[in-house]
Each structure stands twice: as structure tokens, then as C-alpha cells.
Length: 459
Image 1 (cartoon, rainbow, N blue to C red):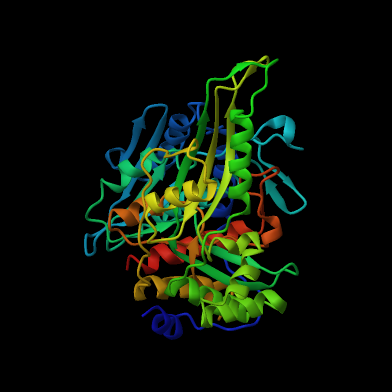
Image 2 (cartoon, helix red, strand yellow):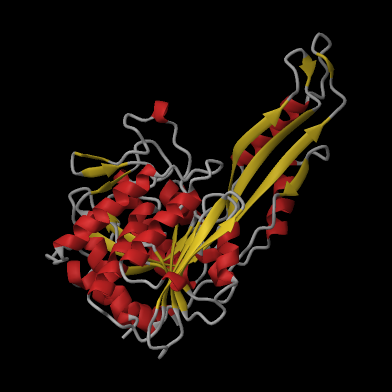
């Protein structure tokens, strides 16, 4: 089914495409830029308690722009919040949800070359924590909805903005949001998908995110009686944990595939030169080709599409500098291929470690979801939006190796699609890292992208 739809609707080509001019009202561009700059100033990091204030700021913008007060709600959840804003339509179709998240990953000012919570324009880029993930598309979506209100556009369905407040951590607000809209037809997520540019600026492809891996974390804990540091013993908990982590570092999960990932590698391989491109095409034809899988896995940006991945991310050990550790614990974060039970991955971790003293436990309650279908209406809208800037550009279905809010909407039975309109070079992607940035030139294109998607899917 996926291959038939891709062939029929995506009009794939194998060459880079140069941008066509798009026209967005200058006031919309100015509004979007101002919203983004103000958004960066809200330090919506876990534990700072700033998400509710940021949500109130967005709510105020929408109400000033024509949304009825009763249609805009800030929902408080502990120290964070979610925002729901309903753009009323005629009710001809079921509601369309528009997803983005308000929280960001921590950024320490002393590590950055610029203040991470003040948007800086420099060298054709906008810098700041969250300027890419995910306040850029959030700001473009809000500005687009304000534009639609000013144009008195009446959709044939309700357009419901659903902004989560803890996507980067526990996703509790997302779970709450996904349970509130059983009547929703689909979700468009600004925190997924997007365009890829070559280093010379040519557009290579647009990724349509239609699936993602399961996010799950495990703890590995080793305990023993400890003792005085002047009397070392062979069963040191830190050393044993270190040995366990070395085994995990050397382990790779078996390659896996589904229709979506094979199509992704087939089309991406057509545009990728050299050994990597050849490996992609071979893996698409024969997913049992171990050499091809190993070659692809050697590239961090693609390994997640080939297999489950697990990596140690945190350590906690010992209780005093002059005492043998009584406890040593590591957190291992895994991105699990769809269809693989969380318990099976934990069992494989324990088997690889091979130490009965190492206790492997699953953190929290991981949620998994299946891929969304490649719907004709979504494909046509995306095709039209992409063609406005890059006629005939390849559109490639994608499984994300990271977790987004779409995970919970898909788990609730609502088809979800990552459709960010940002086009970037992979070398410019510093999401979650130092000096996060996005091209200034992405603003106008992303605004046009969202305008087309929302109007096409609600006529």
C-alpha cells in the first residue's frame, strides 16, 4: 500500500531543486518573527515554572487576534501547562489538531557563545534555545492562524491548536491532550518532518514523518554491602556497573524493517552518492543484507531507521569519597523499533550484561504506537505546500528515531503526521545542543507551508 501511494502521489525525483519565490504578507512575517523572539525569552525548561506564563502569552495573542475567550484554554498540570485553542469551523469534517510543544531542553548560558534565552540574529541565522525545537514552528503556526483570522477564513472543520508543556520530559500534558479529542480526524505536528538542504543550498527532499520509535528508559543497578575505602574488595559496584556498560556499548540490536523504512531508504538511497547510497538501496531491496545494515548504522542520522538503539545517558554511584559504593546505577535510554515490546528490550539488555547482580528495570510507563497511514488528503496537501517552493521535490515518508507528541496521539488512534516546513542543512541542526539555530530565510517559507496545509485540509 505504501509503495503504491508513494508512486501515485509523491512524484519523486532524484535531483536537487532550487527554491521558487513565495509571497507571505509582510505583516505576517513581522508578527511571526516577533512571536518567536518573545518565545525564546520564556525559559520553559523543566523545573523553571515558566510554561504557564508562556502559554498565557500565546493565549493572549490568539484572543487579541479574534479567538473567542471561551475557545482558548490554558490547562495547568503541576508546574507546567498545556494550551488548547479552537478555531471554529462549519463542522463539515471532524476536527484537525495542530500540535507543537512549548517546553525546551535546558541550556546553560556559560556554555553558549550567546545568551540562549535571547534570540540573536547573526550571519543569516536566528540563535536561541528552542529557536528550532520547537518554538519556531509553534510561532509560525500561531502567526498563520492569526493571518487566517484576519482574512476571515472559515474552515470546514474546527482547527484545534494543542500545545503541550513537557514534551522534552514526561509528556504528561500530551497524554492528557490525546485523551481529550476522540473525535479528531488527524494531527499535523510541527515537531517532525521537514525539508533537507544540500550544503550548497539545493533542496534535496521533504520528509513526511508518519511513524516513530518507542521511547523507553531503563535503570541498571548493582548493589553490595560496601565498606571502608581503605579495604578494597573485588565486587566494587562501580567497577561492575562499568563492565556492564562496556558490554552494552559494544552491543547492537538486530536490524529491522517495515514498509515505511524500506521506502525511506529506497528513495533516500536514490539521492545519496557513494557507499552509503548503495547500502541504502541494497537494504531496501534486501533487509537481510547485514553489510548494508552495518554501513547505514555507521551514520548517526540513519542508524535509528535500521534498528533499536540504546545508550547510557546518566550515572549515579557511591555515597562518600572514603567509602566503597553500596549502589551504582546507570540510566539507559532506548529508541525501540515499532512492534518490539518494551519488556523484550529490557530482557535483551539483561542478557547482554550477563551479570545476575545487575537489576534492569523499566522507568515509568513507556507508550508505543503504530505507523500512521499515508492518507491521500494529507499527501496531496503536503505535495501542494512543497511545490509552492520546490516544484517536484521528492517527498519521503519517514520514521523518526526520536519521540514526539505524535506518539501519544497515534496511540490514541489519531493519525499523526510530522510536517514542519523548515528546510535546513543537516550541518545546521543543533537542536538540544549548543548555539541552536535556524536560518532566517526559513520564516517566510514555513509560514507559506502552514498556510497551504491548513487551508487545503479544511476546505
